Amino acid sequence: DRMTAADAWDWPPVQVHVQALRLILNAGCERNAATEQLLKGLKAVA
Figure (tube, rainbow, N blue to C red):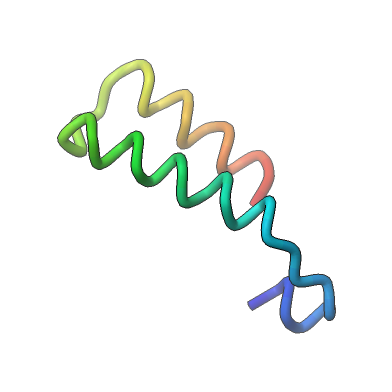
């Protein structure tokens, strides 16, 4: 929504989030060190 409002739609950031979601889903949605790090990184760029 922010990207659309700012007229700054860009696929690479979307791709990063989709890949992160795939990793989390493939890990069975378990909270572990790897998923915590992924979530921390996503929050940093959101």
